[in-house]
Image (cartoon, rainbow, N blue to C red; front, side, top):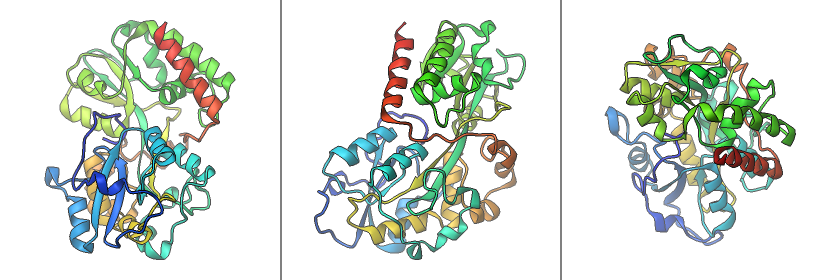
Length: 357
């Protein structure tokens, strides 16, 4: 899924790698759109759901050249340092801030995106795009904990469960600095949304205390560890927690009472786009209620599309607080911002140092 740093998924659906890697500024045909997205982040015909790319091509006659990336940083580096042309990208909150600050996105023509009216108010004019000029929200979710009921006797209520000495050797932790540091900052009473180097130092100290209790740091490995009952507890992205629970009936979830990271990804058009009108057609298509609903079902992440929620999702999904936490809970959550480069570099350095010790 989107939030896992996946094994490279080569070329998905109708990928045409060569077509995407045309130089910016060249003329292009009017019949294509180059989409750069996370791996496993669009309904592809599995599980009796829509093959979104095929459906878009059939409806519009526009060919989709579809390639994938694994991290926001990979996306950024490709846009910044390569002679590429993409028309639609789907970065996360903090990366959107960075792209806007560096003048790397085009303003959207919302006359070409009438389905924008389907977006819930909470997911319009996002924190990273307060004027709502550059983004149409695609998907959202929160971080949570997954735990094995045969190993953890009481449902956790706080991130401090990841520091439980009675679970020594059975605890997993995010293997990325941003998420791991954010959890530690919350426990230190720090808002991770806007952190300083001093905040990083405090979080690093907290993570160093946790290190002797861990089994390992994980990303994708969390699925094997938890689904096969090889670990007791882990933090992860709520949509993926749903997937793990479906695979192992001994698993349950816990949501920190004080809130967690609220993350979202949004569709944007980079400045190197050569097919802006087709890009807006693609963005508009993705917000058709039936399309947004099938993407939601495929991902197990929340849809920002109100009509999709109201008309195409069953009650079990709508009532699943892992996928759709209450507004009250979301109000407790924080959204990552684009911290200064020196702070982010320092965060990465300190995290690597902790892992190495």
